[in-house]
Length: 181
Image (cartoon, rainbow, N blue to C red; front, side):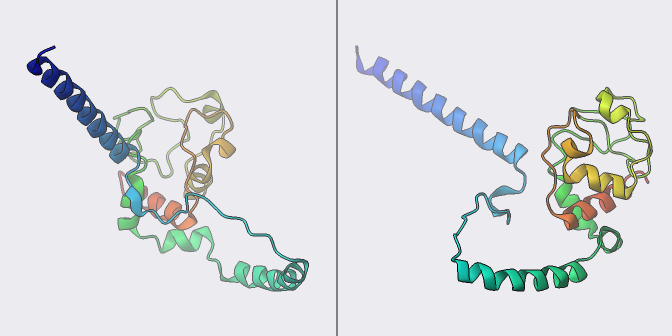
């Protein structure tokens, strides 16, 4: 094999690797818009407590839970004080499957005017479970759905795992309420 052929082969392999890496990077940008700065932990380390620590922490936990229950704002309070800019940022997680333009379905139905619109009321092929729920997408209904779609409507086609943060859900619902409301 001459040097020119070897150079072409090495160049082809390097070029293919470069294209693969660029496609991988592009896919990560599209499907993980939060980037590497997300505050959610990727894993959790469990630590065993001694019997003495558990006994003292049980009393503290009961007091702490009562204080925490009083201190946590309700969804309605979070929704009333929602940050629209934060909601727009959180919506980036939805952009891969949903559009905000009226009638522009994508993988999922369009979200233009979603707040207080009938559940499964637009022209889209919804799962039977979701179509059978009835009622409207009130902020409370949207909150329950976005928390964990598979719990709200078991059998739904939506593969999104949900938004853990109640304030993120309130922000994105308030943002959606401004779109075509």
